[in-house]
Amino acid sequence: MTVAGTVSATPPSGNATYDLVVLGGGSAGFAAAIKGAELGACVALIEGGTLGGTCVNVGCVPSKTLIRAAEAQQRRAHHGFRGIPASDGAPAWPEVRGHKDQLVAELRQAKYWDVLRAYETITLYEQPATLTPAGTVQLADGRTVRGGKIIVATGASAWAPPIPGLAEARYLESSGAMALDVLPPSMIVIGAGAVGLELAQLFARLGVRVTVLEALASVLPAEDPAIGVALGEYLRAEGLDIHAGATIARVERGSQYGVAFTTGGVSRVATAAQLLVAAGRRANSRGLGLEGAGVASGVRGEVRVNEYLQTTNPDVYAAGDVIGDPMFVYVAAYAGALAAENALGGNARRYDLTALPRVTFTDPAVAAVGLTETDARARGMEPLVAHLDLTHVPRALAARDTRGFVRLVADARARTILSAHILAAEAGEMITEAALAVRHGLTIEDLTQAFHPYLTLSEAVRLAAQTFDKDVARLSCCAA
Image 1 (spheres, rainbow, N blue to C red):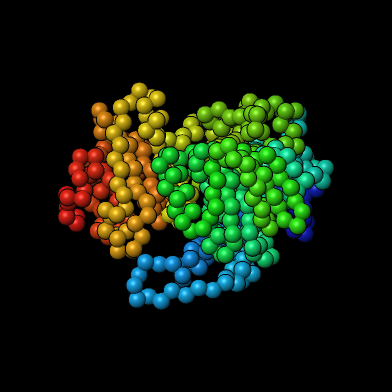
Image 2 (cartoon, rainbow, N blue to C red):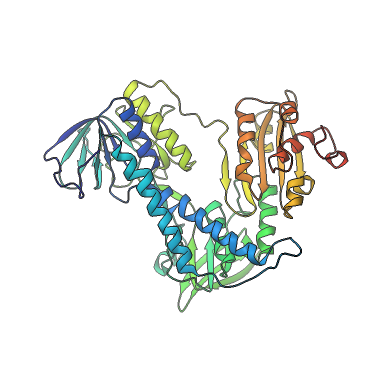
């Protein structure tokens, strides 16, 4: 690897030409650069911020680390086992945060810097860059980089709704919340999607009084409605003050934050020491020179691509969060590699998100894949629905945690599995089987006849499939 930025002792001077130029050093950009190198291309990787992008630095890795720490704190005082002493105590937040920062630094080094050094044909430029009408890339230091093909993989950033007073009040985004020097006594969270709920529960478990405001009718509004209702009740039972269907009128800041909102026709004001906005993300496309380069974007700034991840400029491709939803790191990595393959070898492979699983890391967690019951009906299918409460799952009973359920949706005629919706302590570890079932058209019988180890949560998938035709309450353990 050559580093042509601030850390290079002898950076190349003048202009440079590469087979592939990648804008963005996150998951999509790295995957694109590595695939390009594997295909024999000479690659320029350009990153104007912190190497590694959102996931390792301010997203998945730090948040899930803190979520596990908060879960350990919760289990100290709240578990379902008699005879096991429960202890409580305030968490040492600086130490928890420092442990998280250490892991982030270690993974950034091991999975990004060290990986780059293994590829001699990738040159890293550590500075901002823009596309030009001439089809080149202009670096911030004035140099020009030329590429046979270009991939835009600049990611996305947190977005805030246009609420009166919000910008003036100043607020936390998710990255800032996870980097707080001290835990606040109270916090308001605007947004009850995956990020908002994960962080709301995390801080509540660390002793922060949390109020959650969501504009839509339930938490996790993109998921099966039954999941939103049940998860909302579990979180309220932990002490979170959750208001769905909230219309926020204004935000003010004095000695603390005040958020005026209305729910059910009743006007209220929530107050707290900190305010976190987790209302979604928007593509990092502004200032890249897209329009001048003939690259079209959508109303939210997302770069428009075709089924091969090619933009409206045939020499420019795009991948990852910059092309819009779904913004998952595993989708970004897949898209980056695919974009490089298509850019260098011709448009041979289509961008395919069939049977894409998604996970929300609350406790209990949420995982889902495939069509909802409503989606199936809209497509002219007659859906069958099986619902299994975890009270019927031996592993959940043994763990003294029966919160949640598994819902499967199948096509009534072909009996193929169309979707799965799981609310369980380890839902993310259970969804892959269902994703494979949806992707490969497996039937109800394929799931019920497959071996599932006893006293695992994955057994719930088989039990749920049996529920299509049987009353599982009348079956013995491991009964077929």
